[in-house]
Length: 523
Ligand code: D5M
Ligand code: FE
Ligand code: ZN
Image (cartoon, rainbow, N blue to C red; front, side, top):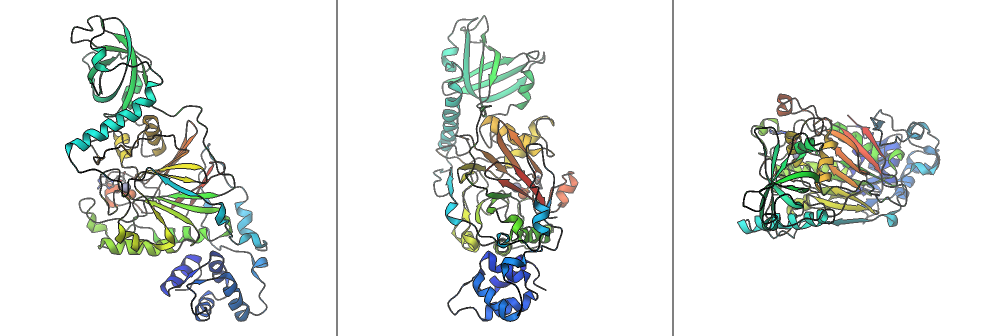
């Protein structure tokens, strides 16, 4: 196969045991005869070199192509239609000199990537990997819920004057009070009102939302196990053992409306992707390679980070009859193949990956990062491997990465206008509002018993990045950018049967200095 693209150059080089600078790859891809250029570059590589430098490739090309101009005036022609700009929501801004950058073949040196490695910074927090304390005992389930309650009730207590339910039970009828609690039950009454049972560490209390209250329609946003606060008036018979609180207002832990996200100090970008599903017959290898190629182009020179939010591979035995659609049946071979595809992206990218429900780690959340054996397989480009969820701080911008299994639950439970597969970011808004990535326990979302609840959003992220539902969607909620990143897998038989039309082959590109986003299509 001719080596016309940077991605193929990279995989050919790695198959021969070499790495190369991004600039060196670009030079080889642009050579008049990339195959011979690569052969010559490898043949003449210094004895001890593992990585080919651009200087080395320049000197090889100078011999092979006498009369050739140096890189400074050669420019780059990406020669295909990939990297097209796609949809752009109102919260985002396109990159308006894109066309020019591709077309201008006499662009000076700036077309060669030369990242300022010193300016980079990556910090990871909230990562369960290696910290898991759960023994699977009942007590651990108690502690994880107690910890959730402690963290989120603290956020709500600053806003209402709440009393413990045991104290509320003793209060005289007709008075006003507030309760902070975890929702243990929601029922509609015969007359169409809503009875919400709130639980705190001292007991439970019934709270009634009348159907004609202006906030009654927020009841359909409520999920079991989430923490809310209510203020209201106690029934006249309160204190005699079967009182009730008539709710006058309802509060979520939420993100403050005035939240001011942090931004990076320089123009630098991150590609936010997920759900690669290598090993599936539907994995879109060509689209992936176009994406990887684009990352080698000058248009992508500011893309210095790549975040992958789970489902690297298709896995084995994840769903019934999944084996009928497997291209690679061995799990480890799937990771090996994923690693081959990862090699196609520029070696100087900072990569952070977390697992998803198709990956070979425990299903219950929080999921630890991949084990040593899988890390070894995926060691390419020194990718950082973290748990699901994790907060990744890139040059001051806090990005909460979470695979997104709870989105299925939010979408199933809430009315369409509040959360749907077509607008996955709206389901993400609900998680931000609840300040928890997987509020409801016991349905699709499996929860690992731990001493501490890693799934609580202790602080407000600047960007919330999820995947899982294979739909692209983004928008801002109280200034926090929520991005669900689509996938690299075409529609599966199951998805066809339930009418899920995936958004495959898109890469959302985030400006870390402005938090504007552009989506590029490679499919
Ligand atoms: O999830 C991709 C999306 O499709 C997510 O919304 C779950 C849903 N999905 C896919 N296959 C199934 C089956 N067999 N049962 C239930 N839901 C499914 P992913 O994690 O990539 O499979
Ligand atoms: Fe997936
Ligand atoms: Zn998934």
